[in-house]
Length: 409
Image 1 (tube, one colour):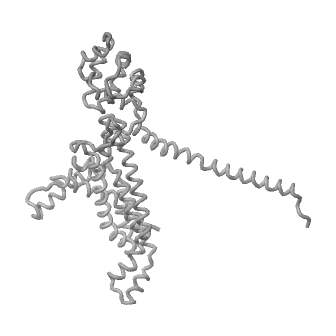
Image 2 (cartoon, helix red, strand yellow; image 1 turned 135 degrees about the vertical axis):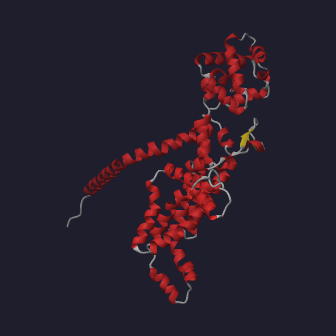
Image 3 (cartoon, helix red, strand yellow; image 1 turned 180 degrees about the horizontal axis):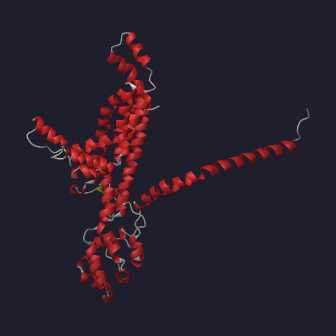
């Protein structure tokens, strides 16, 4: 055989590279719809949420002249006459265009009461005579307070850490230092702590109920197995709202549970089982239990019964055989199910909102309150960002811990 010439080898390698590129392009074309779907449904919403949590463009949009005038203001003393004149022109133009209300609401987040001040001044801005500093002071003495102008400069943006700091019960002082808010305003960390505590309790309850249930389903007769798994899967076929409404009927003061307790003589009068923490735990466990049972059952079905019999033949008691042989082999399913239940619990909103009291609301309720009731999208995005970060940190922490201890494969 004659060896191929260097030119032929070069052409061959080039042809192979072209064929490989064409194969990669075709493969990429097959996954392009999936990538576009993930970008539109998953990446862009999360990116916009993160952007809204640090965005502050209302001031620049509604009061452009004032924003430019305050850019080089030191903040040590009241601004000059030019800044007052710029504010008068911006307020007059914004009042005519009906855009003042938005920036007034934004400034009210910096200092309560600024909304009424801005709206009151905007109504008179077109008729204010120079010198403008004296005219503004005549409308309201707060225009000669440096704190008012500092609040306006803080809101000038275009980026601000205010919302993210606020959901951590922190605030930024004028000199740039970050301090804790007053105790009567520190509410958001309480929501976060409550969210984690309730998620942990729900996860432990699901483990306590789900492990024996999955064990029985994995080792019982086929008919009983179908019955148990059907009961576990039944909640997936019913809407969360329907299930929650059913529990409200069951747990209310005149419901089945209270009627049974009174009839049996356990209690003298109906007890509070709904619109409190107990009702939230009951409904959340009922909704999330399948997410623990199903992965645990799939792992238990792969554990040979021969292992337990071998341990018993070597002198182990049923309890010691279970703890030393069966339980370690079921840990991957237990870890996966527990982590899934915990992460789903962190973002729960419907159940606490419908069956919980004011002290049972979780962090997700803040997102809804800020977005739908108050209309503060910055705080809504910051609360959602805090919830997202908490979920990611929890997943990474538990995943690392469970894998180190053999809970996950």
